[in-house]
Image (cartoon, rainbow, N blue to C red; front, side):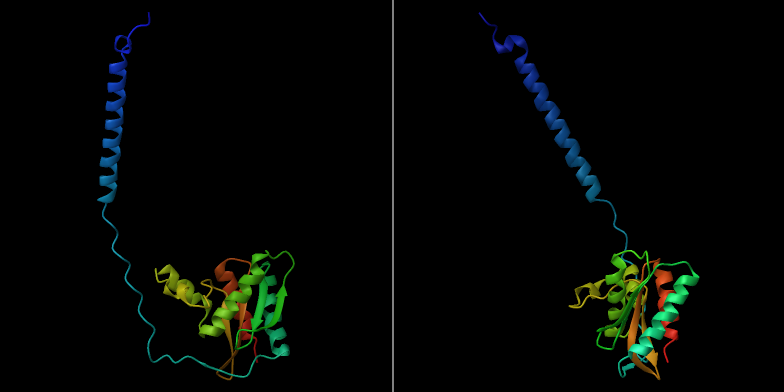
Length: 190
């Protein structure tokens, strides 16, 4: 004859399991309440809006192939001077690709990033760094724009005679280095 489960301590075993489960769920509930009551950090203050008196530049005639090559050459020279491997995109006022150059050894993603930075600068008439600064400050509404800007330094307007003729995008190094390369290129435009 087999012993009855009560005689084997089944009741105690079941009761112990129940108490352990009850204790664990109580701990989880109390832990969640403690986490839920943690104070939240106050939102960061919004950066000051740009002065309304700062007019954006108008678009001019599109950059020529010769101008684009000169801009790219200056950018590549700056990159080489600093031992950087960069992709350079130059776009016209409508964001269309006019000239592209990729230095040997440049990471593959830089091809798309360089063009995105240039398009961002020319379409919004702002350097791409402006969007990076906004994102760092916690402002990201621009990510809902249909043509999403690239929020990374390295997209710079090319301005001749006070008119936007295009933009240059540089990618492949740290953001500030991309910005320096693009600026060197843009400054070579005539």
